[in-house]
Image (cartoon, rainbow, N blue to C red):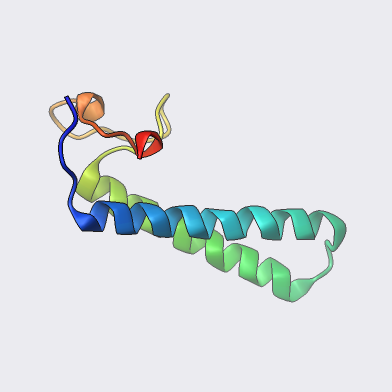
Length: 87
């Protein structure tokens, strides 16, 4: 059974997705421009921001990833839906 999530859930999830898109693009750029210091700084800054935002999201709404990549609250909350990949 799916429950209704607050607007903040969707806002934070969208922000995580946008930041992770930037990280993927910077990673691809850095594959061909490995000495671009500014791009490396941006990559690291966005990676840190993504990690922090994911921690905040998981504390409020539960796990983002399965198979041991995210912690669970008590009681085990993998049964809670919608899962991030279902939105």
